[in-house]
Length: 224
Length: 332
Image 1 (cartoon, chains in turn brown, red):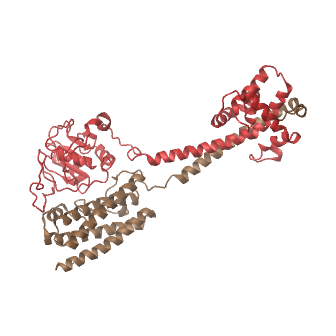
Image 2 (cartoon, chains in turn brown, yellow):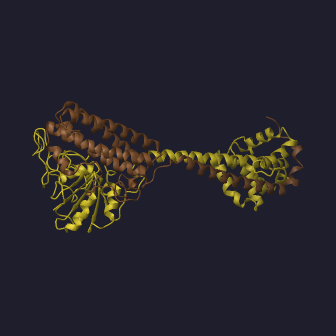
Image 3 (tube, chains in turn yellow, purple):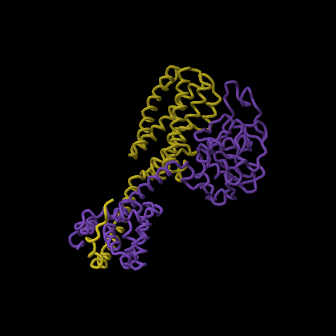
């Protein structure tokens, strides 16, 4: 327990109190202001860095996620029908694969939109993000290219065995062509790695599946 | 002096310390002890309070010397509890007319040291609080479930999730369900969901099936059967080609058009009402209480009665079923 050293400090009191204190106060004030500025700038930088740069509501990424989800949904429908009522075992496996894979991919795209804090439904027409301001790319009845019509779906539902196989191949090839076109469109427009990765895998995977489906048609004695 | 030799803010605070320290290298220890003894009985003050206090008093400090000084002298101790006791000590000194020189001196020196110490605490405190606050905000933000991030609110709609959450149970039941709301917006339902892949039904469909579609995230547009065809066509255009959408006429509506999502309802009188699109944007898929579930379904039949349990499958669908017709073409 060291003793306080009294003598040394004696003179300080009177001489320094007033101006010194004022200066100290000024320093503290300045330093506090400086600290606040630093903190504000730091917080701003932190927010700027920390806040992910999400695609916005009218972006190609959001449009792709929404439109491809709808496109995929119909592929799931068709895959489930063919899995149930198709004839050729290998083709039913392809259908099973398509349905499960595309349903999973719908979930991925839904989750992008969740993370981007965007609705699953856009405020622009379908595929507006692809049209570059030109006229709508939709078919007259509002379908996106490649999607089967209600009548075609109804026919597929009623088909069995070989009939289902052939119709499924034809509908799914057209469906994939439309899907690949959409995937290419987002690859041309987006630098979002997550989006690009999935879009590229869709493009590649669906291209292989088109070949597989064409081979099935040939094997079934139909023109691909 | 400080401003002359140390123009930068960063080095400013250091100056007073050097000055006071040069005559008394050993002093801090002694002061610390003294301080501690005097103060030990008082409650501890947290670092946050200290910096908050310093910040709060600062703007006026350069003018009001006495109060500013007293506040500032306080935290000198790296020794421990800072403001409360220090502040009190100094204050009592002044008011009592300065009983002891020693103490006054100590306070003055303490003030000088306090300058740098306060500054340090203020800077560190503010920056630390900012970082911690931001980190907390981030983790909170990232963990918010979807739906709380975006406002799911449309003018004039009814939110049954808030008003009557109990009616939104989700059991599978056979036969008719007595729904509290017309059309139903949720509740127990049939095990089969109505096809909702942009399905436009020209006739009534059973609520028991449609409610299951709502559970899957569909928006169900219903309208009175006497709605003009032009209006119906406008509605159908919003539905056709859109998965997670279905529409049908419905008896007993209190408005020309009524939109349903799971737990939400909006009644409007015209297909041109902009709130229809707002409702669809707000709730299509996003109102699902079973995220990831699908709208594909063999069930495309119309009628006012839910399907009875069918061990053999959906009526009209063969063993390996072809399924009923998806409604096509313009509604009647």
